[in-house]
Length: 587
Image 1 (spheres, helix red, strand yellow):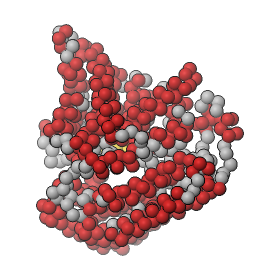
Image 2 (cartoon, rainbow, N blue to C red; image 1 turned 135 degrees about the vertical axis):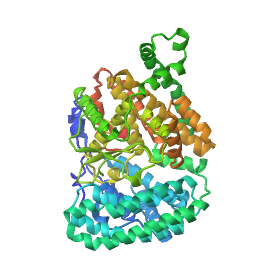
Image 3 (tube, rainbow, N blue to C red; image 1 turned 180 degrees about the horizontal axis):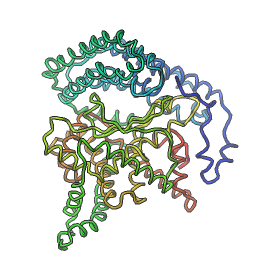
Image 4 (cartoon, helix red, strand yellow; image 1 turned 45 degrees about the horizontal axis):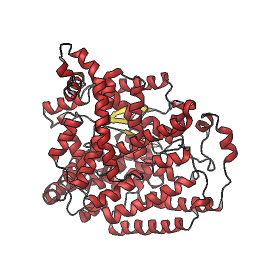
């Protein structure tokens, strides 16, 4: 089931309200060309292949044609993908891109870039050979996606779940055959997540059985067989793969440089990113000090001039003071709900951008998804008819010491939680993706291949917007600037690890000394940094490009610049990389 499309026209409502440009746009839309027709035909065939090869992605996006399938991880399956994607690139190369009109001009570039990326992942990066986590999408998330949203009757979803349960043992066979020498941290994390997958297989379908109890007896043997296969797989990971997991989690400079191009779709080189991030680190630290100084004088009225002149001391003292107000595992989700409402009310009251009416719910992170960060936004796919968004908050692991747990919640104190809800929900990911899902075009390219740098960059950019508008006062502004430092440290850390051999000690010093992070947060981020490559750069690069785009709009429009109109315009074109947005909106 896919969202109906409106004959290829972009939605014009936000554009019409911006500075009276509507009449110009309406009269200047070009007629469809032969190149448009050729591209739209080629894109449909290509995207059908992509979704068929990646059925879990299709389910997440809201295309439910392949809900009974799992990815084929066999060598023949990967080769089939590569062959088909090469054929699609050849077809696209024959289309005259200069004759494309409307959204097709950008979407043709996005499609080519992502086809090249898929080929690169399979043939050069090859995570299927060293990343056991890459299989967990099929072993756990594929079932979760069928239960999380009410997109079809329970009996329909359970029949698809049965097909996926039957396919799990084959995925395990393929994973065992492919995995050679993973990094130790990847195998350790996979073991933890597989435990969650076993619980999900045994218990995760219960809400659907409550609606369709007649199917429980039919699926019970399949659940047990899949759970047994996963249990044996967990033992294999522990006893066989883990002892020989001696691979380097660093992918190396050459692969990092190539992967960065596909991750960011940016014209910035790694060297330019690093130089700008290091410069911004100094500038934002200065802003943080200026914000902290009045608070420091208020909290510590007996401080002498020598103390107030010590930049690092002032910032750390204020952050430590604010960190005393924090939640715990029992209260953090409820506090998140309260904070989300505060964010929503503030955005409406200050008329910062159009607020969506789609539903949102805060949940505890499912166990099989844990280990990569405190929170994430699980928005519905662009094609998903059930539009509910989940913001998941992860409790601390049960094996953490009280001291480490306290350090974690000092990091995610009450003021930081306000900034976090801005980022993950309002007006960050939830709001942006709700707008993005309303974008319509002749093809599904932009819906399927969304830009992580645009999405993450927008979320960080809105932290700045809310702080500048006064949300949460100077205390929350402190956390916003601290988060901006974290974004900068992320980019430096990511590149430092994979291109320059940064050690754990160097990474922790960067995060704790320059980023003012609690030890628990820094240690957790080091683990996450080992489990990713180039993704941590998306926050900074996306933010920098959003900042640059807004500055260009302010310069071009001068006194006519209106912040809400600008935001609604930028939000109206989906989630392509910022450089493509600028092509669309003219800034």
